[in-house]
Image 1 (cartoon, rainbow, N blue to C red):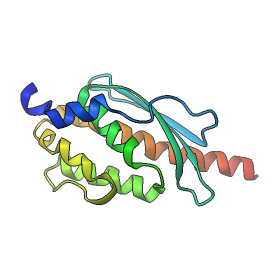
Image 2: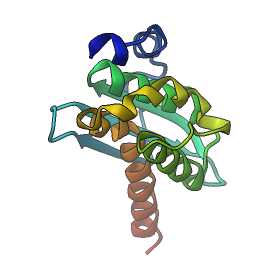
Image 3: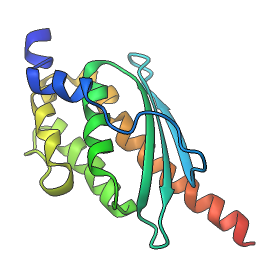
Image 4: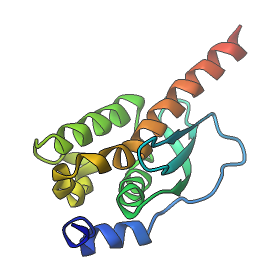
Length: 148
């Protein structure tokens, strides 16, 4: 099983995660934890005036699959809207159910397509995208609070 899951492409992504750390002034942040394996990912985002990601930082304490997914997110998130992140998450979920890999911004998720055969690993793979989507929701909530 491990040879099929931990391909050179997955290990390369996991080893080269960009944007690890914390932001000084995030607009939104969220942490997600897999109840299945205990993997954790925290994503912090700073938004530009158009509501797109201007900066992102993450902390991924996850297996190589979760780290690889976080790496894809971090490498492609700058300039993404909430809709882009949602589409990436939905494309990832569809791919894990056997659909083709997402195209466009998050096409590098194709390196994880073979993990569709291992449902117990899906929760860890989805964490970064779920956290990024929640970070957008939290940023919107913060904006609404400060506007009132």
